[in-house]
Length: 148
Image (cartoon, rainbow, N blue to C red; front, side, top):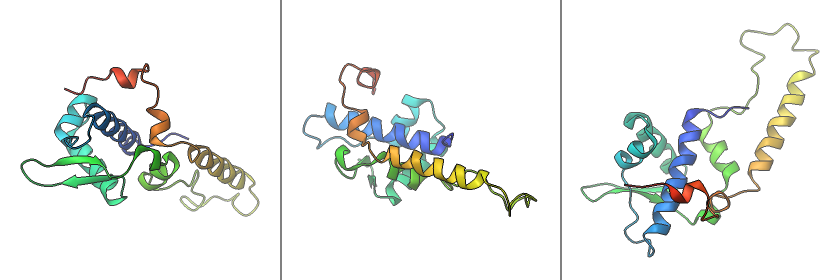
């Protein structure tokens, strides 16, 4: 299974916001702008704003409007489950669509149930991890990321 860029960018945004929160020590001034995040990851600003909006609607981040506005994590990284992030960001986790175009094998095919089981196993594995789990080691490349 390959995740969409939308989900990939969502995970990058969450990692960035967690790193920013930790760098700010007290967490009070940890707001980041979509412009800053887009610049760090070399992502289209327009695409990133859609990702940020979706993350906010899903409750993973808080958005603050205005001159001093920005985004930050809505809850602790320990409470942001990767499986839930993927489920919220992906439009469909259906591995194949047998209806379009209509598949002549659909009534007797055993492939779709196998793929559905594999997708469920994929999501269940992701649900074992949180944002904190992927940001935990201070000596990994995430912690070397320059935010400015």
